[in-house]
Length: 158
Image 1: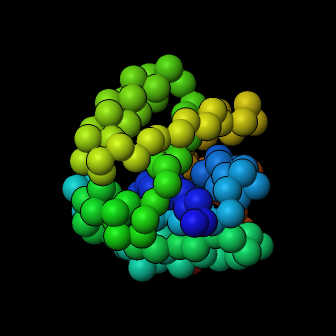
Image 2: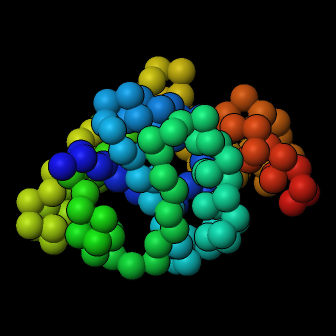
C-alpha cells in the first residue's frame, strides 16, 4: 500500500515556506497530496480555482505531488483519499499549540490518522500567507517570499 500524506491549507497564496514543506515531504513520502481549502470565511485574495492552479504551477517539478481543492471537512478528504498522515508545517510555538489541538481533533474524526509536524526551515520561519498579502496590499515587494507563478498572479491582480 502506498503511503499517501496530505498537506492541507488555504495557501492564499502559496509561499516559499509552504513550497519548502511540500518539497521536503515529497522526499520523505511516495505520494503527497496538497489539499487547498476553500476557506470562504477567511475572505481569500485568490479564489479556490486560482489557488489550486498556483499551487499546481509551483509544484510542477515534483512528480509525486498531486494538488486538489476541497470545501469539505478535512477528515472526509482524508478518508476519501486513504491518507496515511496529515503534514503540518510549524514556524513557532504558537503554531504548535494550535496544530496540536487540530491533530487531536483530526485523529478523533479520522479513526486515528496521525499528524506529522515539520518545522519550517529557518529561512522561511517568518513568512506566512498573511504577511505576504499584507506586504502586497501595501505595494511592497514580495518576490523573495513566493514562487514565480504567485508573483506573476499578484502583479496581474494589481
